[in-house]
Image 1 (cartoon, rainbow, N blue to C red):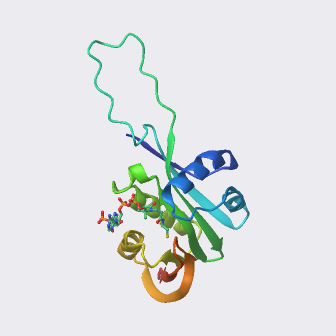
Image 2 (image 1 turned 45 degrees about the horizontal axis):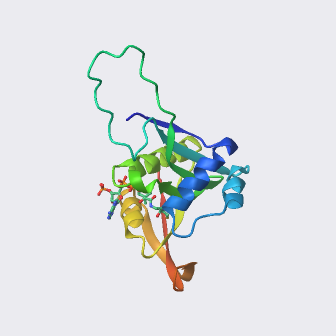
Image 3 (image 1 turned 90 degrees about the vertical axis):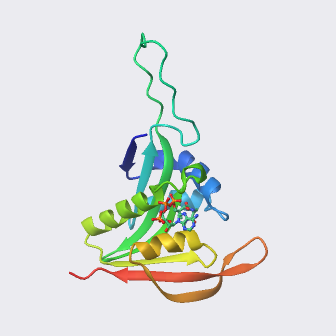
Length: 172
Ligand SMILES: CC(C)(COP(=O)(O)OP(=O)(O)OC[C@H]1O[C@@H](n2cnc3c(N)ncnc32)[C@H](O)[C@@H]1OP(=O)(O)O)[C@@H](O)C(=O)NCCC(=O)NCCS
């Protein structure tokens, strides 16, 4: 599997919407996703040349007569961030459920932080569901620290849950 990192474009909206609905319990709407291409936002995405749901192709029994077709790249993850001066808020990050737990979320977060560094961003902010321990573990391992909580912020199937607010600052 080879991976490609690049910024998202409005042409990616269909793929983004499908991934958004698969990855999140309360997905953003298509309109909200589309608004991520405004001036202050920046994005990144991760594409795989094989569908993460497909098993690895078996070797051909005989030498192939024609070159193997390269499959269309599949969107397996993306981030959307709001950058203002030297601050960035990570608004959305997700990996396709079938591709989770294989290190792609970490690679995507590292790609995001590298994009921040290129923009001179030193202050990093995000909000995450209190129940989302998986994402929190990822953020903690990337230097984010919890600094506060927001009570009953996110809707759930049965009511509301708190947001954990996390941040870190890069010092020269
Ligand atoms: C959060 C998310 C982006 C992580 O992506 P991923 O590809 O599954 O993560 P990785 O395989 O790169 O793992 C990175 C780290 O996440 C944490 N993690 C991953 N799976 C975990 C699990 N099942 N339990 C606890 N921690 C877990 C670990 O800290 C892991 O690091 P380690 O492998 O060194 O222990 C992904 O689970 C996702 O898209 N979730 C749904 C959307 C979402 O919750 N987004 C965040 C909103 S704030």
